[in-house]
Amino acid sequence: MKRYISVISLVLSLTLALSLFTGCGNAGPFDGSIHELYMRAPGGITGISGGMSTPAMAPGAEWFDGEEWRYVPFDETEEYASAPESPFKDALTSPLSTFSSSVDTASYSIMRRQIAHGMEPAGIRIEELINYFDYSYPAPKPGSEHPFSITTEVSACPWAPGHLLAQIAIQGMRLQNTEEIANNVVFLIDVSGSMNSANRLPLVIESMKLLLNKLGENDIISIVTYAGSDRIIADSVSGSETRRLTRMIDDLKAGGSTAGASGLRTAYELASKNYIEGGNNRIILATDGDFNVGESSVDAIIKLVEAERDRGIFISVLGYGMDNLKDNIMEAIASNGNGNYAYIDNIQEAKKVLVDEFDSTMFTIAKDVKIQVEFNPETVSAYRLIGYDTRRLENEDFNNDQKDAGEIGSGHNVTVFYELIPIGGGEGGTLVDPLRYSQTITTGSDDFMTVKVRYKEPDGFESKLVEHVVGFDALQKSVSDNFLFASAVAEFGLIVTDSGFRGNSSLSSVLSRAGDALGADVFGLRAEFLELVQRYGQIAW
Image (cartoon, rainbow, N blue to C red; front, side):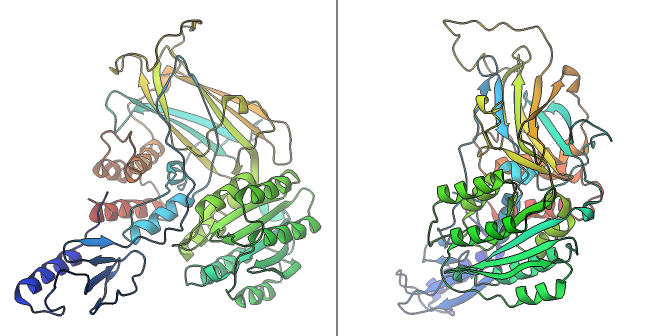
């Protein structure tokens, strides 16, 4: 297990060692039992306690038991959506890879919070680290048949000598004149007792006020809160009444249990009552995900959001707080409700999601976006999808329009990486034994793969197909800054998840490539990533 250390902890250890020999110091002689606990927290020492009682230890702190520092984990009621990472697949016997797109970003800000508190990152979904950043992929040309473009690059894999890394990039078109699109928005706000801390309801309040400032007279706003029961705070108020709505939000207080399913039903009832044909009908759920009263099973909640999704009412989820976070529930709600899931750890993140990325958060340009890649066994021996572990689909799901998948918002990027073992890559042959009853016939093509994307229009029910062939000419020594930076984030994801396929990955490699590809970095997010990697390097060993 990774351990965490800082200069201050080293000083404390030396101080304690000295006290053991001298019987001096603040602690006095240490008798070998847990009578006295030296406490430290992510921000420094929290205090010294004597006597038989154990001090209250804040999550993220550490204590010394006379022999070693022991880590106090954050509340183990945190629950994360995760799945085993994809293994390498043989391109001859398993040439198809199918999964749902994702534009969620929650894992990145959760990881940032964890590292900032000296925690080992948990529940990380690598694709959400990659897709947290904006990339300058070519936009679809005006008048294009489809609302997104597909570009690809293939180059040497930085962490696996002899392997290749293939990048698939989907760039959504940016809607024009979105201010003319009417919004029917319901704020569904968790005000239960679990939200009663500075990084929860107070941060929710400030976040919602940012969002209010982006709405206007064409928009209809409703506000529902829920704790032991749900309550309608605002019903069908014009978005132009910012002051009135702001006062309502400022007055919110936390307390009680969490009847989330009841609150969801009430929110959907208001959204249905105010439904705008051809508009954006959406619920914004702000919660820590802890639904503990009433019909709170994940299956029941998912059935509810699926039914409303099919009626054209989407739901996006904003996660808040720590030591009680239910990431698995929030990810499932957004995924099945045709929305996106972001985690808000500070007001800057709220501004990023709700102001800077307002259009991509609020306006869907393509729904049920599924990706299927067919690999050519003439050039690819084996392949592995990096991330998207909770998004994998059966190959038969690709052509099934009844199967739900992810959404792409206005201007959204979707980035996908495959690690490839090329033919002759020195891996010692195929991964599976030859088939006895059938024979695979290849075409002699030198393509690497064919990328197929199925999607529906936001109000459509039949999917459309886009195909993109990745020829051998996609292989290049000199790659774009998009490839450099995104692959550096992917490599960091392999490190922090302790992937079994991390190979020769290293923080120095991450910092080198990411540092060479900062670009304009208008919002400073790429520079912040470098700082995050450096901080991780200082605390992890």
